[in-house]
Image 1 (cartoon, rainbow, N blue to C red):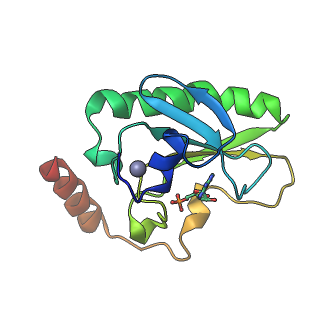
Image 2 (image 1 turned 180 degrees about the vertical axis):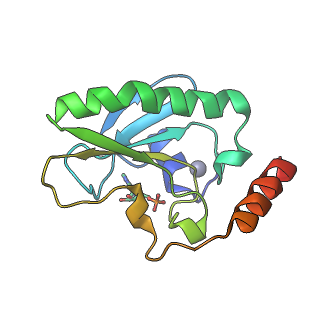
Length: 141
Ligand code: AMP
Ligand code: ZN
């Protein structure tokens, strides 16, 4: 537990939350400032800032729970789909530095966009640049 982390405090019961799921590894609760009805957060019980810092079994537990809860959330609020996403790192919009996944219910005609709308401008890459990027990612693993 990280003492100054609000999500650790939620897990510890020191800050109230509307819990929707809990097991040994994972905790899920309603986002207090929902982007849509049913907006749910899934967090690992152990504190880690970035998804890469989580041990692999806990990372798997978070993603398994996202997969299990998404249809439950969708059904509960009678949504037509969900966006599942993570803001991983400050530059990506992460504000609470305890890694978490969002389940955001979506409704036909709600006016929202796809995950593709998170950036304003797309880069134009040549074939060579695509190849370089792919090679760099393979090497960085
Ligand atoms: P992110 O930008 O991915 O770090 O998002 C953090 C999310 O946590 C935001 O959607 C907040 O509304 C949500 N949040 C912050 N504090 C609380 C809280 N005490 N209970 C529930 N959700 C919270
Ligand atoms: Zn924490």
